Length: 597
Image 1 (cartoon, rainbow, N blue to C red):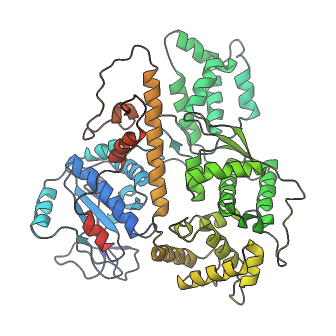
Image 2: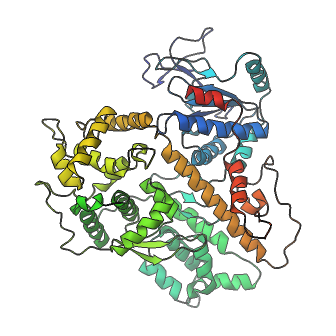
Image 3: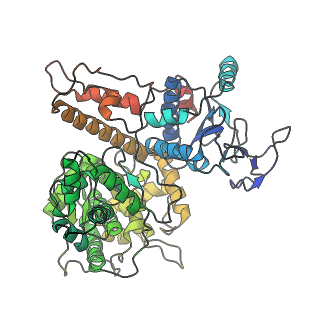
């Protein structure tokens, strides 16, 4: 077992299991000597999203295990509100790649899950029930007495390793990155429906467009041309739907149309082959600047040139959305990106409805332009607009210029913390005031900006700034820390706990996941209704205790889309069906968890 005698949370030392458990923290391995997982321990950590989020995630995961009839034991990991869920696997255990895939899938549904023990079979270990916590206390089961004895007896029966596949079938997910890809490799997302690289969409290169537009010359290797075209499209963030559309008309992809005429549909296979190749390319940072880098620098300078502009109603959200778009644009090295409202909402830590509403305001103010509206599963395309050169110059405020380009990542990380959530947290205005105060910290004196300077810099009234700084001080958030210190993150986490905002981001992720799955179900229902020769009499629901294939269509997973008595789509009932599948019903012991949290 691994031990932590100094309570430093490093577990750097190992020892044989003694006859009596030690009085300091210790952890047991999940995999055997052959790196096959014989134990699964789901560690729902309270550090990032708070104890309530960890408890809620544990409730939902335990509900799925209970419905599947899988014996498991649930414990409170210690005084911080974390949760552990344990289960045993029968021989020969689960393969490490399968468990890694499960950890990646569950992380998309349970944001508080610590995937480290499930992705490293050589050293992955978790403190078992009874092991001390470094901050005092022990890992304690939720159950007591006869109920605990019964649970332990059931746990001794072990569970078939197929439970990994059962849980994967219960949790729709994007694909996990290949474990042995080169450093910098890009993962593939939307594997089941519309696979693409996990990067913003950007225009095709001139070489790819030329191959698409030209009919292959006689004697040319048309298979190589198809692969080159699809490889260029994949690296530009295009999807399988884009590949199918191009294959239908593009002169350079004539070979695919000829194959289809002979009864062989090869578009999907060729796309996945090119996608795998593109994903394996190491995305090393460019060594030379291009004109788009200068353009993005101008846009960032314009955003920060007049911070007081964002003090207007809704301005804090507008600023945050622009910085999120800018971060995506820098990753893709283009001013034009495909982005849906929910993904942008998660990047900016606001609601999807807020993104939809504020993008129209930003478009009216010429910060962005909608190049193409969204349709079906295709996201809308937005372009960051270049500001007027004169307007892009940083404006002097209290003798200090606007932040230099490259300032946005740390600002966005600060502004998207749960503490600044709307309603449940302190709000966007408080985030801007706090940032203005700490970003002006002097290295010698250790002092931040005074209220007058912060008011002039942010555009808020002196009374608002003074009141906000007083609130931050009461929460233990002084302005004497620099923005790039780890202590600041700890202060923000503690502040979010005090105001009850911990876990808001995790809840937003779950809500967006539910909305996406509901939308996918409705689109598949529409496609089925328009299909000729379809069979009727399909059952309205499918038993969720059956381990469906991981990429099973939503209509197979949930049945027919519910309708009202008048034949109209019943979204309320459909949402309830998807919620039961993705969220599950909390077990009876969840009340104990909530009391402890």
